[in-house]
Length: 438
Image (cartoon, rainbow, N blue to C red; front, side, top):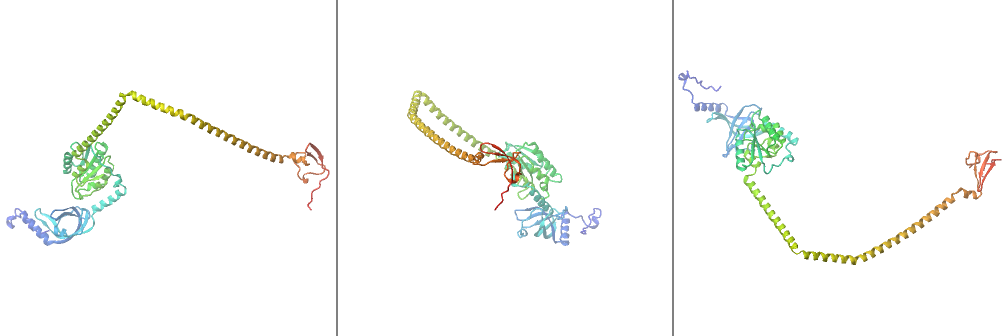
């Protein structure tokens, strides 16, 4: 308790007059300054901005994920001593003086020094989800699609009451009044925002009535823009059937929707400007195309006119054309008559030479065949058994027709058959003598 006097309407006359607002705020400021004064506090930056004067203003959130926050001001002299540029979601330690901003009666920390203390809870969550989705390839530059050069219809996903929608519609009406605009409304902040944003993007994708889709909202703190860091919104953007332009927040604001979109714009107005060319540029392009077509038609007409003139000139003097063709035919006939006998003689000579070559090759082939036949006949005669028998040898066989080639095959008294050169003799073995080696 601060020990402030109790304001009671019935007892005010007895104690003291009622507090004025300014006096009460000053009293609170003095008590806070005297009771706490200089302190060091740790928390997460939110809504950081730097004015043209060099002063910095932001909120410091509870680092443990609570809802408590305190407004902070860092004047130019202290801001100039910082060794880094603070960003939303960054965890920092601040040293300063706690006081009260009297015009609004708000508790305020006037920061004298700031040092980084790591990433805040939301920022750490942002980085973890970004790394996981990036590993899946959802942010791969290769999957980015080119925007259509001349879209006939542009879709916008945002809140109906948002200033971003007014900015986009104003920019499109100014730049491309010929382009049809379809709005797919959704809230852009709060617990239900991710589901509704994903549903609106999915609806635009299913209806497929626009050529490019703008997903946008105005600037805000990291918490304000958190719906555009939701995995459902990122996957809906990646699955969209048309190219998507993200225009979330200001140029310094970065969301996962920016990484998933086919093109990121720094602001909603810039998104509209990137999605549609100006009417003037379209008209200039049409004029250039019309001029090129006109030149092409004129060139084609000139070419055809020249061909027509040449054809008409030939038709006006058909006799000359007939004479030219007759002379050409006579020349060809003369060349044919002079070359035909010579060509015929050349072919006849060539045929005679081929015939002589064929006869010579045939004779050589027949001679080679005769020689081979004689050699084979001689080898056959040499192997003829009759020739062996003619030299005094006989072919012996037993009663079963088996050839007798050894004395051990026969016995004394055994009948045999001997085939001689000019007949067959039946013989009987009278004695068997084996040849002994000496």
